[in-house]
Structure formats: structure tokens, C-alpha cells
Length: 383
Image (cartoon, rainbow, N blue to C red; front, side, top):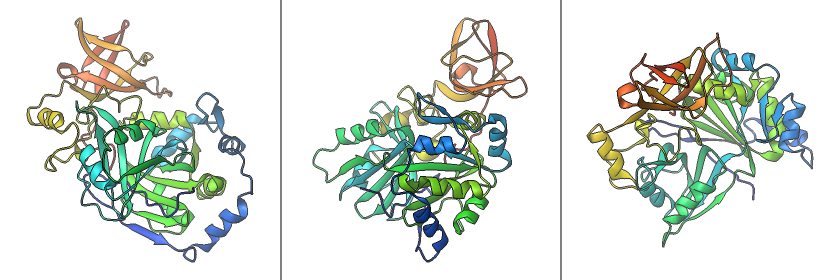
């Protein structure tokens, strides 16, 4: 079943966003464009991206680049990049107890969310470790949308179902039904507003039929996420590209998110880390009461017990993903992400440094090479 009338929202620090519902009359040319341009039998998602110039990583079924990764990287800071995020988690949770259940399972205060509100939260284990970082959207009474950048949503679904006993709550994965794109950069809002005839600002959403736009802040960049049925994805992508958004592959996206200190699932957002270690303090309510993992997270915050912290690394020699770092023979940290692009002879990455070694400028070692620790901004990577 196609997801309809879905509100997505990206907010930080407990803020909320309100749906702006647009009728087809508001932007009839877009509706006509989509239904006229979409064939009865759509080509596969990868085939359509290839036809737009994408070089595809067949193992990941994702665009690596669109011909010029360096130019694509520049678009993240100079204009706006258009990135394919299809296949990332898009989960629907329904039932009278859905919101209360998720409130009791995650770090942020959710119970007061009204229909149309959305916020970020972290799902943690009993030990306070990260299961997933979610955008929770209260679509309507008894219906939530859970959006994340993890691949698929089965782990999150399994975790919620583990704690669903007598609650009225049903959950399903909708990611196979939707295409997801992100427009990221200083001109992101301007270009999307022009393309869709809307007036988005950070923290607000607008919906045009089955297409949902949501504006947020991604580190220091503007970001607008676009969710659309896969049958309409070609027309939506083309409209964004025609507006001036520059198609960018995963190579430049990974380089940009590492440059901006943004952690992701399978690298930094894993059960090896807790929310405080990856700078997600703004996604935690310290007054809401109990949730799974609450005692551990609260104790770490109260007694300043963090033993490691997310940092950036720079080196004049290539970095190795998963490399263990040391200093004077002592364990000092680990590299969890490596940028696929080398800028000005500098290799960059993200990872964790232990408490005695996370100060800016600290030099660490691995395999006979040196890396320098660079502190990240205190601001949340998601807001």
C-alpha cells in the first residue's frame, strides 16, 4: 500500500514542526508533471539513476558519483547537492499506544507530540547503547512515521516488537515503497522552494499529494529531504535537478558528512557507542523519566563518565578504516569512517578518541603513521 499524506519532520533540541498541507491546486503544474511524466511501468530505480549519469556501485546498488566527485563535493558548501537516499529506513507504526510505547523506548520526550509534530530521538539498549537514531513524526492520532538513515528498518522493527506485549501497536517497513532524496547545501531551501512553489524554512514540512518535503539543519548545512512514491521518483528528481540542485553520489556525500562531523549507522551510530559519545545530547530529555537505557545515560552525564568521544582525524598519509590508534603504547582510539576524497593532500576521517587523547591537536599513531585529532563542534549533527 502506498504511503499517503505522510508528514516528515527534522527538528533538533526538542523543537517541533507543523504540517503545511498543500492541495493540488496550490501547485497544479507539479502534479501534472508527475502524472504525465511517469510511465505505467516505471524503470527500476537504478536504471533511472544510470540514465541521469550515475556511476553505480552494483554491490550497494547506489550511485558512486555523477562524473566529477570533487565538483559534487563543492556543491555541499557552495550551492546544493542532490543525493539519492532511497532504501533508508521508513517505518510506519500504528495503534492507540504507539506514541506512548516509543516514548518509553527512546531518549527524547515524545508523549506531548501533537499530530503534525516531529522530533529526533535515540533508541537505546538496556546498557544505553545506540540501536538507531530516529525522526519520529506524529502523522495523525495513532499513526507515526519513523525515519532514519540506517539501511532497511528490520533491526528497529525487531527492537520495538521486543517490547510490545499488550500495547495496541503494529509496525511495518515502508522503505521499499518510497524513493528518498536529500538536497543539502547553502542554497537547498532556495532551490527546493523554487522547484515546488513552497516557502519551507528549517523545521517545517510541506506535502504535495504523495510528495513530502522537510527542511532541517544537517550540521552547519541546510537540508531538505524529499520522500516520494517510487513510481514518481524520476519526475521528482528531474524537477530538483532542473531547479539547480547538483546530482551527487555517495563518494561526495560521505566526504561531506565526514567534513561536517555527522555520524551514521553502521559506522558511529552502533551498539558500541552511547548517545553522549556521538554528541547527541540535544536528543536526550533528562527530565522525562524512564526509558530503556535511561539510568546508564543519566549516570554518564551526571558523573561525567564518558571514556571516549567522537572526533575528526587528519593525516598526511592514508587512513585505514577500523585502525586502532595508540599513544606511547597506550590504547587511544579507533577510526570508524574514512573520507573517500583527499583534499589538498590531507586524508580525513571520523572516529573515537579515548578521554586522555581527545583534546584538539593530539597526535596519535597507527601502523607507523600519525594522525591529528580535530575536535568537532559542540552543536548537534541533527537539528
